[in-house]
Length: 455
Image (cartoon, rainbow, N blue to C red; front, side, top):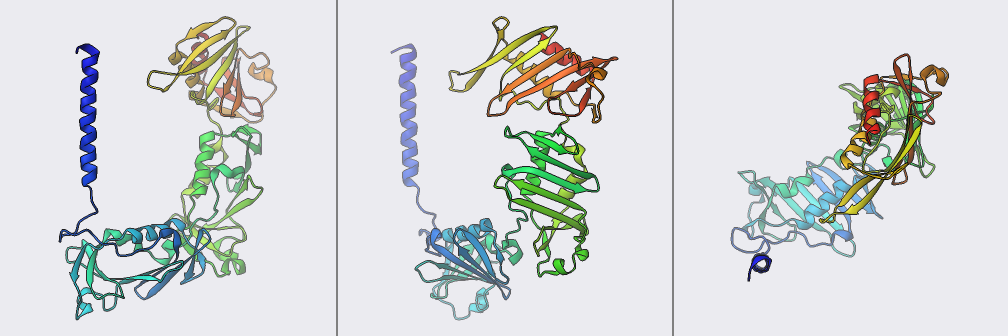
Protein backbone atom coordinates (compact mmCIF):
# COMPACT_ATOMS: atom_id res chain seq x y z
CA UNK A 1 0.00 0.00 0.00
CA UNK A 2 1.68 3.17 -1.17
CA UNK A 3 1.13 6.81 -1.93
CA UNK A 4 -2.35 8.22 -1.47
CA UNK A 5 -3.77 4.80 -0.46
CA UNK A 6 -1.46 4.60 2.56
CA UNK A 7 -2.26 8.18 3.61
CA UNK A 8 -5.99 7.49 3.32
CA UNK A 9 -5.69 4.36 5.47
CA UNK A 10 -3.68 6.19 8.13
CA UNK A 11 -6.21 9.03 8.24
CA UNK A 12 -9.02 6.51 8.65
CA UNK A 13 -7.21 4.86 11.59
CA UNK A 14 -6.58 8.26 13.25
CA UNK A 15 -10.21 9.31 12.75
CA UNK A 16 -11.49 6.04 14.19
CA UNK A 17 -9.20 6.36 17.20
CA UNK A 18 -10.25 9.96 17.82
CA UNK A 19 -13.92 8.97 17.54
CA UNK A 20 -13.42 6.17 20.07
CA UNK A 21 -11.68 8.60 22.43
CA UNK A 22 -14.56 11.07 22.22
CA UNK A 23 -17.09 8.31 22.85
CA UNK A 24 -15.14 7.17 25.91
CA UNK A 25 -14.85 10.67 27.34
CA UNK A 26 -18.47 11.61 26.70
CA UNK A 27 -19.76 8.32 28.08
CA UNK A 28 -17.89 8.94 31.33
CA UNK A 29 -19.36 12.41 31.84
CA UNK A 30 -21.71 12.58 34.80
CA UNK A 31 -23.55 15.25 36.74
CA UNK A 32 -21.34 17.47 38.93
CA UNK A 33 -20.20 15.84 42.15
CA UNK A 34 -20.15 17.34 45.62
CA UNK A 35 -17.30 17.06 48.09
CA UNK A 36 -18.88 13.90 49.53
CA UNK A 37 -18.62 12.17 46.15
CA UNK A 38 -22.38 12.27 45.52
CA UNK A 39 -24.14 13.88 42.62
CA UNK A 40 -25.22 17.44 43.32
CA UNK A 41 -28.89 17.88 44.04
CA UNK A 42 -30.99 20.60 42.48
CA UNK A 43 -32.63 23.06 44.87
CA UNK A 44 -35.75 23.59 42.75
CA UNK A 45 -37.75 21.36 40.47
CA UNK A 46 -39.93 23.36 38.10
CA UNK A 47 -40.50 23.87 34.39
CA UNK A 48 -39.26 27.32 33.39
CA UNK A 49 -42.03 27.65 30.82
CA UNK A 50 -44.67 27.30 33.56
CA UNK A 51 -43.31 29.95 35.94
CA UNK A 52 -45.95 32.61 36.58
CA UNK A 53 -44.62 34.55 39.58
CA UNK A 54 -41.28 35.33 41.19
CA UNK A 55 -41.10 37.05 44.57
CA UNK A 56 -37.85 38.39 46.03
CA UNK A 57 -37.53 39.61 49.61
CA UNK A 58 -34.32 41.32 50.69
CA UNK A 59 -33.61 43.85 53.45
CA UNK A 60 -37.31 44.02 54.25
CA UNK A 61 -38.26 45.03 50.70
CA UNK A 62 -40.44 42.83 48.51
CA UNK A 63 -40.34 42.67 44.74
CA UNK A 64 -43.16 40.71 43.11
CA UNK A 65 -42.97 39.87 39.41
CA UNK A 66 -45.91 38.39 37.51
CA UNK A 67 -45.99 37.00 33.99
CA UNK A 68 -48.87 38.11 31.79
CA UNK A 69 -48.83 36.32 28.46
CA UNK A 70 -45.24 36.63 27.24
CA UNK A 71 -44.52 39.81 29.20
CA UNK A 72 -43.37 40.28 32.78
CA UNK A 73 -44.92 42.93 35.04
CA UNK A 74 -43.78 44.25 38.40
CA UNK A 75 -46.62 44.38 40.94
CA UNK A 76 -44.61 45.35 44.01
CA UNK A 77 -43.18 47.69 45.25
CA UNK A 78 -44.85 49.51 42.32
CA UNK A 79 -46.81 48.69 39.21
CA UNK A 80 -44.55 48.86 36.15
CA UNK A 81 -43.39 46.84 33.18
CA UNK A 82 -40.50 44.54 34.04
CA UNK A 83 -37.30 43.79 32.14
CA UNK A 84 -38.05 40.37 30.65
CA UNK A 85 -34.38 39.48 30.15
CA UNK A 86 -33.53 40.27 33.79
CA UNK A 87 -36.45 38.18 35.08
CA UNK A 88 -35.64 35.32 32.71
CA UNK A 89 -32.06 35.39 34.03
CA UNK A 90 -33.36 34.91 37.58
CA UNK A 91 -35.69 32.08 36.55
CA UNK A 92 -32.88 30.33 34.65
CA UNK A 93 -30.47 30.68 37.58
CA UNK A 94 -33.00 29.20 40.00
CA UNK A 95 -33.97 26.34 37.68
CA UNK A 96 -30.33 25.19 37.51
CA UNK A 97 -29.35 26.03 41.11
CA UNK A 98 -27.60 23.15 42.89
CA UNK A 99 -26.72 22.40 46.49
CA UNK A 100 -22.95 22.50 46.92
CA UNK A 101 -22.78 20.73 50.27
CA UNK A 102 -25.09 19.66 53.07
CA UNK A 103 -23.85 21.29 56.28
CA UNK A 104 -26.25 19.67 58.76
CA UNK A 105 -29.46 17.61 58.63
CA UNK A 106 -30.93 20.15 61.07
CA UNK A 107 -29.82 23.05 63.24
CA UNK A 108 -30.87 24.14 66.72
CA UNK A 109 -29.88 27.73 66.05
CA UNK A 110 -30.61 29.08 62.58
CA UNK A 111 -29.01 32.35 63.63
CA UNK A 112 -25.58 30.72 63.29
CA UNK A 113 -26.20 30.48 59.55
CA UNK A 114 -27.97 33.80 59.07
CA UNK A 115 -31.21 31.92 58.47
CA UNK A 116 -33.23 33.01 61.50
CA UNK A 117 -33.89 36.20 59.56
CA UNK A 118 -32.79 35.30 56.02
CA UNK A 119 -30.77 37.78 54.01
CA UNK A 120 -32.91 36.91 51.01
CA UNK A 121 -36.01 34.88 50.27
CA UNK A 122 -37.04 33.87 46.78
CA UNK A 123 -40.32 32.17 45.89
CA UNK A 124 -41.26 30.76 42.50
CA UNK A 125 -44.90 30.05 41.67
CA UNK A 126 -45.64 27.76 38.76
CA UNK A 127 -48.82 27.02 36.89
CA UNK A 128 -50.59 24.02 38.40
CA UNK A 129 -48.04 23.52 41.19
CA UNK A 130 -47.22 24.59 44.73
CA UNK A 131 -44.87 27.60 45.24
CA UNK A 132 -41.21 26.73 45.89
CA UNK A 133 -39.16 28.88 48.26
CA UNK A 134 -35.49 29.24 49.12
CA UNK A 135 -34.18 30.99 52.23
CA UNK A 136 -30.69 32.44 51.81
CA UNK A 137 -28.53 33.25 54.82
CA UNK A 138 -24.99 34.40 55.58
CA UNK A 139 -21.92 34.01 53.41
CA UNK A 140 -19.32 31.36 54.08
CA UNK A 141 -16.12 32.60 55.68
CA UNK A 142 -14.23 32.42 52.36
CA UNK A 143 -17.07 34.14 50.48
CA UNK A 144 -17.42 31.28 48.00
CA UNK A 145 -20.95 30.36 48.97
CA UNK A 146 -24.04 31.05 51.04
CA UNK A 147 -25.95 29.09 53.66
CA UNK A 148 -29.45 28.20 52.57
CA UNK A 149 -32.47 26.02 53.31
CA UNK A 150 -36.01 25.47 52.15
CA UNK A 151 -38.94 26.14 54.53
CA UNK A 152 -40.28 22.58 54.24
CA UNK A 153 -37.01 20.90 55.33
CA UNK A 154 -34.67 21.19 58.31
CA UNK A 155 -31.35 20.55 56.58
CA UNK A 156 -28.85 23.33 56.00
CA UNK A 157 -26.82 23.39 52.80
CA UNK A 158 -24.66 25.76 50.81
CA UNK A 159 -25.06 27.22 47.34
CA UNK A 160 -22.49 29.03 45.22
CA UNK A 161 -22.44 32.83 45.53
CA UNK A 162 -22.11 33.21 41.76
CA UNK A 163 -25.24 31.11 41.22
CA UNK A 164 -27.39 33.62 43.10
CA UNK A 165 -25.80 36.79 41.77
CA UNK A 166 -28.91 37.43 39.64
CA UNK A 167 -30.89 37.93 42.86
CA UNK A 168 -28.81 40.98 43.81
CA UNK A 169 -31.21 43.29 42.05
CA UNK A 170 -32.98 46.38 43.26
CA UNK A 171 -36.51 47.08 42.02
CA UNK A 172 -35.18 49.60 39.52
CA UNK A 173 -32.81 46.98 38.07
CA UNK A 174 -35.79 44.75 37.29
CA UNK A 175 -37.88 47.45 35.64
CA UNK A 176 -38.23 47.80 31.91
CA UNK A 177 -35.91 50.77 31.36
CA UNK A 178 -36.38 50.99 27.60
CA UNK A 179 -37.69 54.49 26.88
CA UNK A 180 -38.82 54.19 23.27
CA UNK A 181 -39.31 50.47 22.58
CA UNK A 182 -38.19 50.79 18.99
CA UNK A 183 -36.02 48.72 16.64
CA UNK A 184 -33.77 50.62 14.27
CA UNK A 185 -34.82 48.55 11.26
CA UNK A 186 -38.44 49.64 11.78
CA UNK A 187 -37.62 53.35 11.57
CA UNK A 188 -38.60 54.94 8.26
CA UNK A 189 -38.36 58.66 9.05
CA UNK A 190 -36.40 60.72 11.52
CA UNK A 191 -37.02 64.33 12.57
CA UNK A 192 -34.72 66.22 14.91
CA UNK A 193 -34.87 69.74 16.32
CA UNK A 194 -32.61 71.51 18.76
CA UNK A 195 -30.15 74.38 19.15
CA UNK A 196 -28.29 73.13 16.07
CA UNK A 197 -31.39 73.55 13.90
CA UNK A 198 -34.17 71.32 12.59
CA UNK A 199 -33.87 68.66 9.92
CA UNK A 200 -35.62 65.53 8.73
CA UNK A 201 -34.56 62.30 7.01
CA UNK A 202 -36.36 59.44 5.29
CA UNK A 203 -35.33 55.92 4.26
CA UNK A 204 -35.91 54.84 0.69
CA UNK A 205 -37.25 51.45 -0.36
CA UNK A 206 -33.60 50.57 -1.13
CA UNK A 207 -32.65 51.20 2.49
CA UNK A 208 -30.78 54.44 1.78
CA UNK A 209 -31.15 57.45 4.05
CA UNK A 210 -31.46 61.00 2.72
CA UNK A 211 -32.36 64.39 4.15
CA UNK A 212 -35.75 65.77 3.14
CA UNK A 213 -35.43 69.03 5.07
CA UNK A 214 -33.93 71.65 4.95
CA UNK A 215 -32.52 70.32 1.65
CA UNK A 216 -32.47 67.07 -0.29
CA UNK A 217 -29.06 65.49 0.17
CA UNK A 218 -27.72 62.04 0.95
CA UNK A 219 -27.15 60.94 4.54
CA UNK A 220 -24.33 58.69 5.68
CA UNK A 221 -25.49 55.08 5.92
CA UNK A 222 -23.38 54.24 8.96
CA UNK A 223 -23.82 57.61 10.67
CA UNK A 224 -27.61 57.31 10.66
CA UNK A 225 -27.45 53.66 11.69
CA UNK A 226 -25.23 54.62 14.64
CA UNK A 227 -27.70 57.26 15.83
CA UNK A 228 -30.63 54.87 15.46
CA UNK A 229 -28.67 52.28 17.44
CA UNK A 230 -28.25 54.79 20.27
CA UNK A 231 -32.00 55.48 20.23
CA UNK A 232 -32.83 51.76 20.11
CA UNK A 233 -30.67 51.11 23.15
CA UNK A 234 -31.68 54.22 25.09
CA UNK A 235 -32.29 53.26 28.70
CA UNK A 236 -33.23 55.36 31.70
CA UNK A 237 -30.54 55.70 34.33
CA UNK A 238 -33.08 56.60 36.98
CA UNK A 239 -36.65 57.80 37.34
CA UNK A 240 -37.03 61.51 38.01
CA UNK A 241 -40.83 61.43 38.27
CA UNK A 242 -43.69 59.13 37.33
CA UNK A 243 -46.57 60.45 39.39
CA UNK A 244 -47.75 63.04 36.90
CA UNK A 245 -45.43 65.73 38.24
CA UNK A 246 -44.16 66.43 34.73
CA UNK A 247 -47.71 66.96 33.50
CA UNK A 248 -48.44 69.38 36.34
CA UNK A 249 -45.10 71.17 36.23
CA UNK A 250 -43.12 70.32 33.06
CA UNK A 251 -40.94 73.40 33.61
CA UNK A 252 -39.35 71.66 36.58
CA UNK A 253 -37.68 69.23 34.18
CA UNK A 254 -37.22 71.60 31.25
CA UNK A 255 -39.98 69.81 29.36
CA UNK A 256 -42.26 72.82 28.92
CA UNK A 257 -39.91 73.81 26.10
CA UNK A 258 -37.72 70.76 25.37
CA UNK A 259 -34.16 71.56 24.38
CA UNK A 260 -34.26 68.79 21.77
CA UNK A 261 -37.01 66.69 20.19
CA UNK A 262 -36.51 63.48 18.20
CA UNK A 263 -39.46 61.94 16.33
CA UNK A 264 -39.23 58.47 14.80
CA UNK A 265 -41.72 57.37 12.14
CA UNK A 266 -42.14 53.59 12.10
CA UNK A 267 -43.02 51.13 9.36
CA UNK A 268 -46.41 50.41 10.95
CA UNK A 269 -47.40 54.07 10.79
CA UNK A 270 -46.81 54.75 14.49
CA UNK A 271 -44.56 57.48 15.85
CA UNK A 272 -42.24 57.73 18.83
CA UNK A 273 -41.30 61.18 20.04
CA UNK A 274 -38.53 61.73 22.55
CA UNK A 275 -38.43 65.03 24.40
CA UNK A 276 -35.16 66.01 26.07
CA UNK A 277 -35.40 68.69 28.74
CA UNK A 278 -33.04 70.26 31.22
CA UNK A 279 -29.73 68.91 32.47
CA UNK A 280 -29.94 66.50 35.38
CA UNK A 281 -26.31 67.17 36.28
CA UNK A 282 -23.16 65.12 35.71
CA UNK A 283 -23.68 64.82 31.93
CA UNK A 284 -27.22 63.53 32.33
CA UNK A 285 -30.53 64.86 31.05
CA UNK A 286 -34.23 64.70 31.82
CA UNK A 287 -36.21 63.02 29.06
CA UNK A 288 -39.55 61.38 28.36
CA UNK A 289 -41.58 59.91 25.56
CA UNK A 290 -44.12 62.57 24.59
CA UNK A 291 -47.35 62.15 26.51
CA UNK A 292 -45.87 59.85 29.15
CA UNK A 293 -46.14 60.79 32.84
CA UNK A 294 -42.73 59.18 33.41
CA UNK A 295 -39.69 61.45 33.34
CA UNK A 296 -36.39 59.61 33.12
CA UNK A 297 -32.78 60.58 33.53
CA UNK A 298 -30.68 59.49 30.57
CA UNK A 299 -26.92 59.45 29.97
CA UNK A 300 -25.47 62.29 27.93
CA UNK A 301 -24.24 60.17 25.00
CA UNK A 302 -27.37 60.78 22.91
CA UNK A 303 -27.30 64.52 23.56
CA UNK A 304 -23.61 64.60 22.61
CA UNK A 305 -24.46 62.93 19.30
CA UNK A 306 -27.35 65.29 18.59
CA UNK A 307 -25.20 68.32 19.44
CA UNK A 308 -23.04 67.52 16.39
CA UNK A 309 -25.98 68.57 14.24
CA UNK A 310 -27.00 67.71 10.71
CA UNK A 311 -23.44 67.78 9.39
CA UNK A 312 -22.60 64.66 11.42
CA UNK A 313 -25.22 62.65 9.52
CA UNK A 314 -24.38 63.81 6.01
CA UNK A 315 -22.83 61.43 3.50
CA UNK A 316 -19.24 62.65 3.57
CA UNK A 317 -17.98 60.20 0.95
CA UNK A 318 -18.67 60.32 -2.75
CA UNK A 319 -20.59 57.05 -2.61
CA UNK A 320 -21.00 54.48 0.13
CA UNK A 321 -20.10 51.22 -1.58
CA UNK A 322 -19.67 47.71 -0.24
CA UNK A 323 -17.59 45.76 -2.78
CA UNK A 324 -19.22 42.47 -1.75
CA UNK A 325 -22.65 43.92 -2.67
CA UNK A 326 -21.52 45.34 -6.02
CA UNK A 327 -22.63 43.25 -9.01
CA UNK A 328 -21.57 45.50 -11.87
CA UNK A 329 -20.86 49.05 -13.02
CA UNK A 330 -20.57 51.31 -16.05
CA UNK A 331 -17.82 53.88 -16.53
CA UNK A 332 -18.09 56.79 -18.98
CA UNK A 333 -14.97 58.80 -19.84
CA UNK A 334 -13.35 60.24 -22.97
CA UNK A 335 -16.57 59.81 -24.93
CA UNK A 336 -16.78 56.06 -24.38
CA UNK A 337 -18.69 53.82 -21.95
CA UNK A 338 -17.36 50.53 -20.61
CA UNK A 339 -19.42 47.92 -18.77
CA UNK A 340 -18.18 45.54 -16.08
CA UNK A 341 -19.87 42.55 -14.41
CA UNK A 342 -19.11 40.17 -11.57
CA UNK A 343 -19.71 36.45 -11.45
CA UNK A 344 -19.56 34.41 -8.26
CA UNK A 345 -18.59 30.76 -8.10
CA UNK A 346 -17.69 28.30 -5.37
CA UNK A 347 -14.04 27.50 -4.84
CA UNK A 348 -12.60 24.12 -3.80
CA UNK A 349 -13.46 24.85 -0.16
CA UNK A 350 -17.05 25.77 -0.99
CA UNK A 351 -16.48 29.49 -0.42
CA UNK A 352 -17.74 32.22 -2.75
CA UNK A 353 -15.11 33.37 -5.22
CA UNK A 354 -15.70 36.59 -7.19
CA UNK A 355 -14.46 37.13 -10.72
CA UNK A 356 -14.71 40.37 -12.68
CA UNK A 357 -14.98 40.81 -16.42
CA UNK A 358 -15.31 43.74 -18.80
CA UNK A 359 -18.30 42.91 -20.99
CA UNK A 360 -18.48 45.97 -23.29
CA UNK A 361 -17.33 47.32 -25.66
CA UNK A 362 -15.11 44.21 -25.61
CA UNK A 363 -14.77 41.18 -23.34
CA UNK A 364 -11.81 40.88 -21.02
CA UNK A 365 -11.14 39.04 -17.75
CA UNK A 366 -9.89 41.35 -15.00
CA UNK A 367 -7.91 41.05 -11.80
CA UNK A 368 -10.43 41.08 -8.95
CA UNK A 369 -8.11 43.05 -6.69
CA UNK A 370 -7.73 45.85 -9.26
CA UNK A 371 -11.49 46.16 -9.65
CA UNK A 372 -12.08 46.16 -5.91
CA UNK A 373 -9.34 48.74 -5.41
CA UNK A 374 -11.04 51.06 -7.90
CA UNK A 375 -14.41 50.63 -6.17
CA UNK A 376 -12.78 51.19 -2.81
CA UNK A 377 -11.35 54.49 -4.03
CA UNK A 378 -14.85 55.86 -4.65
CA UNK A 379 -15.83 55.10 -1.07
CA UNK A 380 -12.52 56.46 0.16
CA UNK A 381 -12.83 59.96 -1.31
CA UNK A 382 -14.24 62.40 1.24
CA UNK A 383 -16.12 65.58 0.42
CA UNK A 384 -14.00 68.66 1.04
CA UNK A 385 -16.92 71.09 0.88
CA UNK A 386 -20.70 70.94 0.46
CA UNK A 387 -22.15 73.62 -1.83
CA UNK A 388 -25.76 73.67 -0.62
CA UNK A 389 -26.89 76.62 -2.74
CA UNK A 390 -25.16 75.77 -6.02
CA UNK A 391 -25.19 77.72 -9.24
CA UNK A 392 -25.88 76.13 -12.60
CA UNK A 393 -23.94 72.98 -13.64
CA UNK A 394 -21.73 74.98 -16.01
CA UNK A 395 -20.18 76.73 -12.98
CA UNK A 396 -18.68 73.37 -11.99
CA UNK A 397 -17.97 71.78 -15.34
CA UNK A 398 -20.91 69.43 -14.82
CA UNK A 399 -22.77 70.37 -17.98
CA UNK A 400 -20.32 67.98 -19.65
CA UNK A 401 -18.88 65.63 -16.95
CA UNK A 402 -15.41 64.27 -17.72
CA UNK A 403 -16.11 61.10 -15.71
CA UNK A 404 -19.28 59.26 -14.70
CA UNK A 405 -19.90 55.93 -13.01
CA UNK A 406 -23.04 53.88 -12.37
CA UNK A 407 -22.74 51.24 -9.63
CA UNK A 408 -25.19 48.34 -9.57
CA UNK A 409 -25.61 46.55 -6.24
CA UNK A 410 -27.53 43.50 -5.17
CA UNK A 411 -29.71 42.96 -2.10
CA UNK A 412 -32.33 45.33 -3.56
CA UNK A 413 -30.06 48.38 -3.32
CA UNK A 414 -30.33 49.25 -7.02
CA UNK A 415 -28.04 51.80 -8.64
CA UNK A 416 -25.82 54.61 -7.44
CA UNK A 417 -24.58 57.27 -9.83
CA UNK A 418 -21.77 59.82 -9.73
CA UNK A 419 -20.56 62.50 -12.12
CA UNK A 420 -17.34 64.52 -11.93
CA UNK A 421 -16.77 67.95 -13.46
CA UNK A 422 -13.75 70.24 -13.56
CA UNK A 423 -13.66 74.03 -13.47
CA UNK A 424 -10.68 76.37 -12.98
CA UNK A 425 -8.53 73.55 -11.59
CA UNK A 426 -11.14 72.43 -9.04
CA UNK A 427 -13.07 69.15 -9.20
CA UNK A 428 -16.75 68.86 -8.33
CA UNK A 429 -19.13 65.92 -8.00
CA UNK A 430 -22.86 65.48 -8.44
CA UNK A 431 -25.15 62.70 -7.23
CA UNK A 432 -28.67 62.30 -8.69
CA UNK A 433 -31.36 63.46 -6.31
CA UNK A 434 -28.84 65.41 -4.24
CA UNK A 435 -29.34 69.16 -4.36
CA UNK A 436 -25.78 69.82 -3.17
CA UNK A 437 -22.67 70.00 -5.31
CA UNK A 438 -19.64 68.34 -3.74
CA UNK A 439 -16.18 69.79 -3.99
CA UNK A 440 -13.43 67.17 -3.74
CA UNK A 441 -9.66 67.10 -3.68
CA UNK A 442 -8.32 67.25 -7.25
CA UNK A 443 -5.46 64.82 -6.55
CA UNK A 444 -7.87 62.25 -5.09
CA UNK A 445 -10.12 62.67 -8.13
CA UNK A 446 -7.16 61.99 -10.46
CA UNK A 447 -6.31 58.80 -8.54
CA UNK A 448 -9.92 57.67 -8.80
CA UNK A 449 -10.18 58.27 -12.53
CA UNK A 450 -6.83 56.60 -13.16
CA UNK A 451 -7.87 53.48 -11.21
CA UNK A 452 -10.93 53.01 -13.40
CA UNK A 453 -9.13 53.89 -16.66
CA UNK A 454 -6.74 50.99 -16.05
CA UNK A 455 -9.51 48.39 -15.89
